[in-house]
Amino acid sequence: MNESFSAQVRGPSATLPRGYLWLIPVWCAAAAAALWIAVREISGRKPPMWFVGSALCGILIGFCMLLGVLATARHFAFRADQSGVWLGVRTARKRPKMRRVPLWWPEVQQVTIRRRWYGARLEIAPGPAARITRRRGLGHQALLMAGMLLMPFGLGRGTPALTSPRADPPRYVVPIYDLSAEELRSALAPLVPPATAVVVVQRRSVRPARLLPARA
Image (tube, rainbow, N blue to C red; front, top):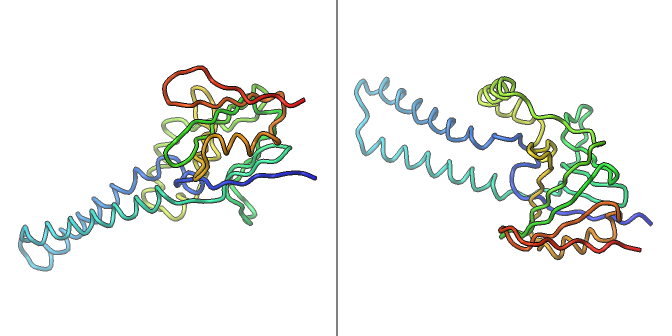
């Protein structure tokens, strides 16, 4: 019987590309500027300060609410079994565009589990033989950000940050919600092969790591 384990991933990384949240302040500034211009054109004079203050407070409240919803969103975007790990939400698209990627255990060199206040942070370091999607260059990333700024519901549904590895060193970062580091280690223990090292970091400071005991 093939055992499996699924967990919720916290934040927007499971569905949104990296850097998407930085566009929200730009949209809020654009909305404030558009409101200023509209009121000035309609009234024919500079808007009063009480109106400007009220409008800015409303936009700021909306910005905080949107940021809070995206930052605390949870998705079942992590699944592990005896063959490997799946990152990303399930999708029925004919062209998934890297919205869900597999990491087979022979391609994983090390798994690091760190304690976090929301649960645990899982870092998966691929081995030399793993197929890694390289990060975009600065020019390509700038064009993508500009496209997401103009078409947030089009290009904004591109490759999620969870399915693209970070650089220096290459690793996949998975914020696991509502599971402690020990609970996550226990859940992965029967699934991770002995050849893959699992390191549990007790604190953020550098301390001797505790390895997951290899199974016989």
